[in-house]
Image (cartoon, helix red, strand yellow):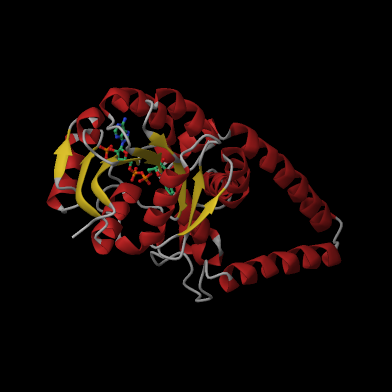
Length: 304
Ligand code: NAP
């Protein structure tokens, strides 16, 4: 039997690393999967769950002989790990990642990529608020987009192979520059997380409404923000530290629009409020039509 890859090395085996493993097994895309993580507990759990055939305590050991290496660690760790594994990467291997920010990762990783190794950054736009090796599932990437951000000198055959890999994991693939990726994700992912973290903290610090009232009456809308705000703090700290410019630009626009809504409420401008809310409703319809969400009312409480 011929496989797309002989040996895939997962560096970091959390939600994304473990989901890749499940989907690789499902599609029979690799002869073997090996991995490393920061702690020996995660490596042991990954072995016990059958996510990896062999586990290592260092990333450098894990990548030896692998023809595909995927960095599935927090954004800020990609550069230091690339430096660590640089001398151990096999010639001809594809080195990729799954980080939620692309400009900073390309800048941090590229200098450590040896000649003959093909570095192509990637970001599967799929996830949940869960983390760790037990949270992954094979269907995570089905019908979702994976964005590749190859540098101008990237090897075309390697880009094609990585495209086929993500398609085999169930995703649609789009190619764009790292800078454009960071701008798009700033509004579609990073800002929504910032808003969710902020509203949950605002509710937490109120004096005239108790915490138990916030929890009791959360079905009014608040609980959907808490799902997003339950995401991993390390991952999100790294996203904001590494996509500063695009996030600040989107935050500026958001604040202007919020001020306009504030004015409309203050001056009783129902027409402006109705127009804004109607336009927003259309966006939701568009997302459902594009197959990126279902219209079922339990949004956010299922895995998909
Ligand atoms: P996760 O569940 O928290 O897993 C992170 C993994 O990285 C863990 O296995 C952790 O090891 C390992 N790790 C952390 N620091 C490390 C280090 N210094 N050396 C080696 N391994 C290290 O995170 P995740 O959700 O899978 O996210 C991983 C990446 O995917 C991030 O870059 C994130 O931006 C991106 N991403 C996430 C989502 C999402 O929704 N979660 C979606 C798309 C992309 P231990 O378990 O031993 O600590």
